[in-house]
Length: 590
Ligand code: ASP
Image (cartoon, rainbow, N blue to C red; front, side, top):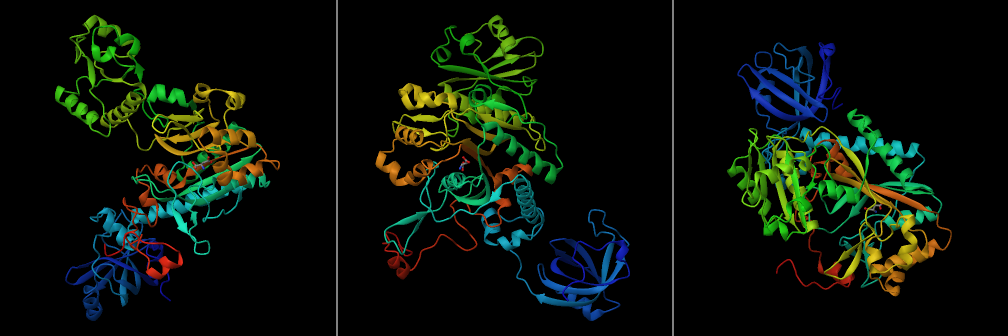
């Protein structure tokens, strides 16, 4: 028997018992007469003590144990004289009578502690060691609990989990596909799903009524902390539903998992239109944990012979409460430089300080007298002591820049509580987005999204300008400024779907070739349907108040899309290449 108990289990009630434990050596401390070994497994850490006087040979053996050796220890549970209140097992220790090394270990390349000295790539290369660390282990356990809570809620709600294929044909979800060459159909490729979108719609045509799947999706995009080339979605679809029924169901799921996993009770989620989100926060995923909302100054600020404002389409301000004193000219210069970095690209940053003593200081004081600046206070909802920051330019760009500034100021002023959760639904997205460069429309969500009922007729008959104004029955769930998921009511009518493909620049042949199966299915009694997908990795991270999804994924890839442990992607040999009828343009040698 390797163990009678695990390393997190023994308490005072076990004192006197003979036990066997197996685990990893966290650390071994030689204090002369006594040698202490901290033995660790998934469940915790237990202190083991070897006594030189009682068993010198055993004690000598214990002194030689290195970090991460795997050992089996027999001994008696005893009360500790100096207790460790920070450890659940801290009241006891094992007086060892036997020690067996089950496997030795090389010195690990980084410390297996809560805070480690290992860099990202090293931790990924030796992921098995990283997983031994408590924070990573706990994240993976949390993920498992979240999956179980999700499955329970959805299956109790009548959802059926159906697996959809991984080798498919590309779905234009907006990203690049990963492709897999077919040996039996030379020259042809499968694509890995960016999502099971078309399959779940087909399941609705098939009468499944309510579908879900916790499913891997693949997108060949540039990577960031919150993006991985393969990630997991909680993917759902429902037949005979209105938008609000979908939102209610998934608001229910979200509330359920917050309650189950964090014991947090969420209030009902507000709904905000896409337009309103942009006007108030300059973002379709606003962080509503703090205020500092946008105040448009276009009307007020123009017409005072300040050319920069006069030539701007849009002028917008945020008011940082009580911050006038906190920001010296040097601080404002720093903030301005931060805004001027190419990632943000602001031309400049105007400020007004409504000083505590009632005086006004402004970087545009030359163009605006105090009386004018004071007259803006009401619109800005500013009081003495507040700092007002202003950006101007082309509307969409300026909104994006101000969104960045607002979030940065929220951080700098400590307005963001990491353990507060502010969910909201963003609704009524535009259906189509005009892309000046390629001179074509893009689907804002995806090509299967339905326009709102009242816009359907206009979509079939309207002109170019009408198309720009169409609203979609699409929605996103946003929590703390993070897009947790999105979905839509779908088109279920062949004519409307075909019209959408026309608008998106597909020829009739292309549409038929890629989506003939779906439009064909619509002709055999497709029910009205809609659905949503949540980013499962992101949901884990948000629930745990963390930014990076990597530590919730057992084997993540690095920023170059590489798996550092198995060293993939890799070259394949010539035989494989020729079986697949592939010719290499680069090789391992070149
Ligand atoms: N397939 C969509 C996505 O991955 C979600 C949905 O519309 O249900 O974003």
